[in-house]
Image (cartoon, rainbow, N blue to C red; front, side):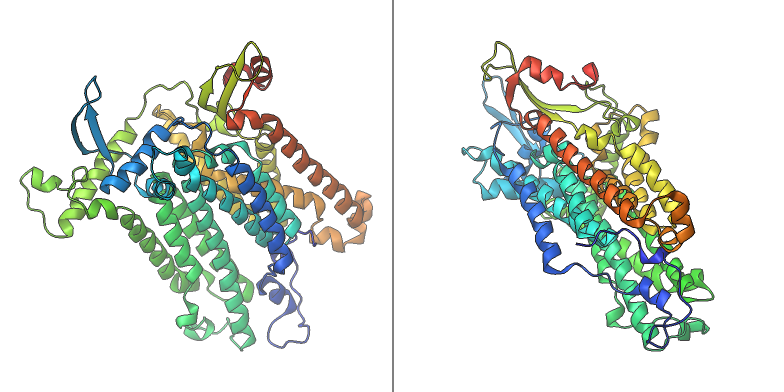
Length: 546
């Protein structure tokens, strides 16, 4: 299998063409479609997916009780099945029902509908498979996310080995693992953001492929006006970009925090469009990009909004949803369709008010600057019942990223900034932008003392894992200038072959050490009962992790 992260964009353009008139070979290399690796590459990625799925589904129903925020989301999934909206049932001290009504909730319903699908499939909340049922879709989505990371890594790095390494690191990360085995919303949020990011990359490749075909057909980008731009036709519809809009709209339908990715992805699309037109020699790349691409970006954003609205279908179709007829309740006219949208706006205003004033202290809250250094993980479940054979036992489900992997993120980010600038690599910008979007936008909330948790960082995790693999690939593969300049290689006293060998050994050793670290923490990820002293030895940061 090929191992390389040398992107064609970093290769110098040749002035002569290699047998195909009209397109310089250097430009052709930058525009030509990326080889997906064929069935062997897919087989390797599917093996990684199988590993992830097996790990996530083993004993998925244990503990057979609600843990952490499952008390909200698993129950709300059942309520959606029963009523079409979230529902509150009031009882007295004897357990008798005294009333019921629609419940005010502060997150959109899509993630809970996905949880509800697993509950429906495994026959409700009173069967022996109850916990397995309400966690089933989380495990499925978490496993598919590993596959997407592996394939996205293959496309970014043009290496099946590096792509599968990214998938393995994702499969062996404690935070993604625990969230994949818990019926809360954040794993679905991460999944849809990841799908949108993959679609944005596929859209970039598709647009470049179309430009290559147009150049081969005789398009001259230096011509003024429409003559120097791509023709508009059914085949020019950027389907992957539209799919990204649907995916990011679905992410917003899980949690609002996904909205930050919309302007970031839109700016990346436009920036790539400008860079592409500069490369092919368009005299006005900014103007042409706005004329050709901005409209489709607007459509993408519009699709995101429509998709988000569609996640509220259950609320629209019932008369029982919370403040479904708010206008009528205050004696205001409620027009068809428009009135329902006005009522939904009121609902959203109340949700926003709740989030803006969420500052209740919590023992496991943390600030964004702590997330990458694992400053405060979250205990999802705890039991001291004897079951380990020792006098004192501890059974915990601890939301903690695999420490060796997470503590590599900060140095990897610094290295990626260096490699990205020195190699002028678009992939570094993409990965850094995705990681930053998932974390940096939370920093202003720290000033308002908003209650936040470590798992809010999970949408950034796929980008962070890919950043680590990007750096490993850069250590393996020398930049183009070094590979082609014999004097530079002699000055560094290192050959390309030696760099590849030592870099591959280091990368393989790193993945192996992450796997061993995951194995050591595995009992704390699944709630196994272990001797208390053994549990205490896992608390590397002492009280910060207790």
